[in-house]
Every structure is written in structure tokens, then in C-alpha cells.
Length: 229
Ligand SMILES: [Mg+2]
Image 1: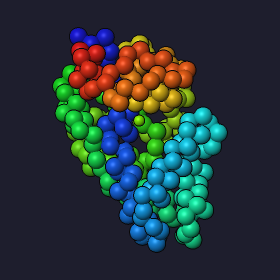
Image 2: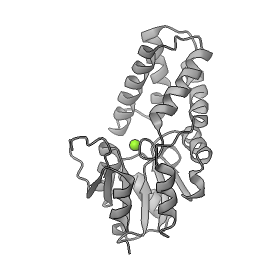
Image 3: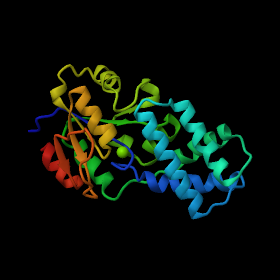
């Protein structure tokens, strides 16, 4: 019997293959707005976007600025005259349509759904993109709750993000919940701040850096399932 009743799961790079979705969506949008679809542009976009999300997680910028600035910055670097707001809208829709799971993620969610524990996805990100992939990948069959930072009005690692989830799930004893995710600065630090145990999903065996302290670390879905058993 698991010591937890509630499992909060990160989405991107914990369940969803975000890199693949991002790449495919970006290629569609670059073509649509007449920008070069070459590797350098794609790599540069990833870099710009990741840096902006980091700044967002540190509370330095808000999400409205982030989503427009990533395309404004890309076009400053590589040319392009489209309205970055429109490019972003089109990208978010494309991202919701590019639904790719990481290998083994579906079986993992299926196995979790058989445990009888309360399951929720707890993700930073944009509603159109996250909700689209949640239903298209079929994860909504296994995981009944989806919490998205933009809809909650707070993002990981802010305690308010977890407060709102616990309220909605009527979870008064936080020691019964565990946050599972690949992001040290978001999932793990957020769990630490909110008083919720964490499992750091670290399939690439990255070194532990920064202030976040995972309760457990797991390199595979099987390992996570063993920790939750
Ligand atoms: Mg993640």
C-alpha cells in the first residue's frame, strides 16, 4: 500500500515528448510565416524559449510577455516581419496538435491508473497546448485531473500553484501527495516549498544541482512505480 494517496505528474519531458512536439510545431509555424526551417533557427528558438521559461519560473517576467517575446526575439535574430503575437497563437495551436508521448509513458499512466491513487497532471504551460496534447495523447483516459499554471494563476515552483491544486482535490494533509517530475527548479523546488514530497524523474542521470532536494530520484517509470507501490 502506497504511503501516498495523490500523485501529481509533470507533463513535459516527464510524460510528453515536448522536444518532438516543439520541433514539429515550430517547423509548421516557420513555414507558414516564411521563416527558414533550418536547424540553427530551431535550436535558437529552443534556447530563447528555455531561457524565457527559466526567467518566468524565477518570477522575473510574466507569461504574456514570454509567449510573444520568444518569437519577437527569434525574428530579431533571423529576420521575419510577422506579428509575433500572431505567430505565437498559431504556434500554440500547432503545439496542441503535435501530441507525442515519451516511450513507455502510456503504459506508465495505465499502470498508475490501476493503483486507485488520485492522479493529476500539474504543469506549467499554455492551456491550448497542454489541453490539446492531454486529450490527443489519450492520457485523459488514465489521469482525470489536469492543472495548468495559466489557468491557476500561479506557476511551479510557487506554493500558490500547489495550494490551488490541493484545494481543488480537497487534500488537507499534504504528506499524502507526491510530485513527480523532471524539473529541479520547478517540480522539485515547488514540492519543497509547498511541503510536498517529490520524485525527481531523471532518466538521463543528470547531476543534482541547485537548491532543490528531491525526496526520491528515479531513472525510469518502473522505478517510479516501485517507489509508489
Ligand atoms: Mg518537465
